[in-house]
Image 1 (tube, helix red, strand yellow):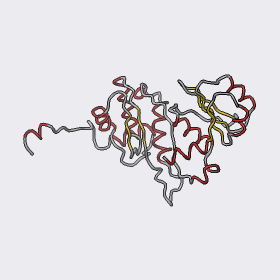
Image 2 (cartoon, rainbow, N blue to C red; image 1 turned 90 degrees about the horizontal axis):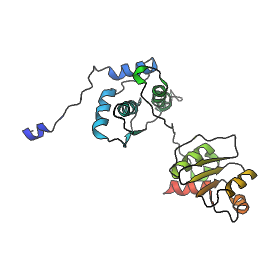
Image 3 (cartoon, helix red, strand yellow; image 1 turned 135 degrees about the vertical axis):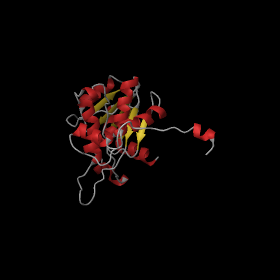
Image 4 (cartoon, rainbow, N blue to C red; image 1 turned 180 degrees about the horizontal axis):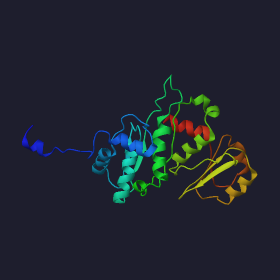
Amino acid sequence: MNEDELDNLFTLRTGSGGGAGTNEIQGIFGRKAFQNPKPKALIKQLAAQASSCSDIVVDFFAGSATTAHAVMELDAEDGCDRRFIMVSSTEAAEEEPDKNLCRDVMAERVRRLNASDDPEYADLAAPFAYLRTREIAFEDLDYDLAPKDAWAALETLHGLPLSVYDRTTPWNAHEGDGVTLVMVDRYDAALLDWLRDRSRQNVFVYAWAPGQLARELSGVEVEIRSVRDTLVRSFQQ
């Protein structure tokens, strides 16, 4: 290695001993909830050097969500608005079929940081959605896809922030900037007047069986689509 190459090398140090990551987990959970977690200081340095204020930081082997913690802390320090996507498997096995590290460690770490009254975490905040993926055959979509899952998929397709699906109402609406999304779970006459008042306002109405709505709203300028057909086309692309 020549002198020029040596000048381009740099070293990242965690600033603490080898048990830094374990101590951080212990401090948040009160127990050793994850084996061999990455030290936050190291990931924080990497995120600081590799990301800018509006970037999305993705970790496909998220483990205990050290990367999420590092991004939250970095944003609190420099006033930026980085976001993160943490991806991992449940690590369930035959001997531990209910094991779910994503739910019980990764997402729980972010929840605890958000809710903590510890001064160390007082400035940390990261509203987030915990999402699961599963495989559904196209021919089984009508039976295996829950309305709340369809709602999340449709919000994503329209670029809307994810919201909680209310199963107690016959239809859900999400009015965003420039677009309104409606998903109809059960036919409701009150919806017709609500939609007539929003004609020509870039409203997209999704229903499992949209035929009746299309007939009732003839002449009203809203886009009526099938939930199933829309999602099948989207998933096939």
